[in-house]
Amino acid sequence: MLLLPKWVGRKVRANCHTYRKLTIWNLCFASITYSVEILLAPQVDLSPKIVIPPPTPQEVVDFVASESKKYGVNVQKSEWIVSHESMDGRDMVGDDGNSRGYWMISSIYHPEVSTACADNLQCSTDWSLEQIATGHIDEWSTYRFCREWYKDCPF
Image (cartoon, rainbow, N blue to C red; front, side):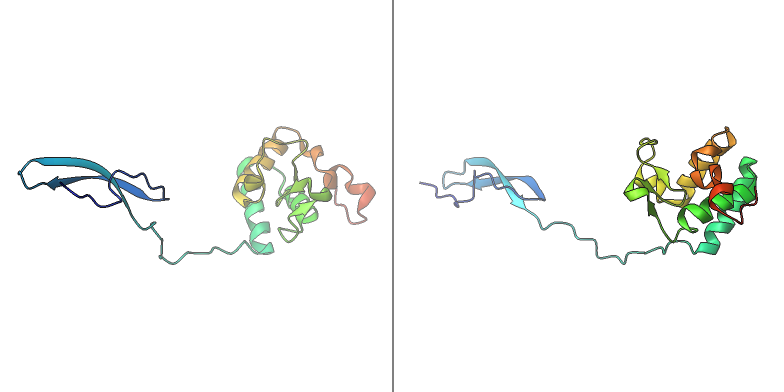
């Protein structure tokens, strides 16, 4: 009689596992093959993580100015919007949590723009400058109500 370990033939669940074939030879030289699950330790990434700090307010201003020129958008207007919407990235949530990111993109009116995009300077700037370049600058209340709300409005 061939005695097998208790774990042979049992299913064991784990996060990381692999299947192996186990061949056992009995005294008559006949082999029996069993499928068993061998548990492996989960892979742990021990490499150092690179944390990229958010851009400084001046870096936001410089980036928006540079991108505005590429899109053919008035630099003064785009800088005004970002400066008055998010304080150049210092205040990333507004309108009771309904607007977010550098450009305060509304999650109500623009659900197609994810929070990840709104919070990413490159992505939100591309989306916003495309909106402005196609004639939708009035979507930003800081521009639309500039003269009513701000004594220093340049427009």
